[in-house]
Length: 83
Image (cartoon, rainbow, N blue to C red; front, top):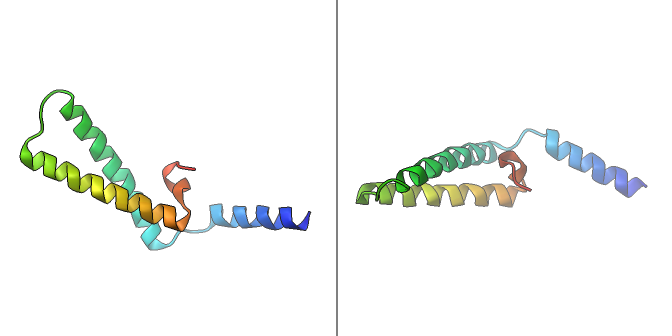
């Protein structure tokens, strides 16, 4: 019983704790880049991307992946709706 309560307390503490600044920034970058990727997908459904747009998309995707990696390492995928 004590183990269960301590696990519950730990889970509650993690959910209510203020995330570190780098984790908060990673969550914000992830949400922004996800929206940009979705916008580019809509553009790609109607036409080909220019070379500059393609390079921008690759950069945005890299930032998105890096941000998710930070969140994964911190165990805070909950900040972006992940498990």
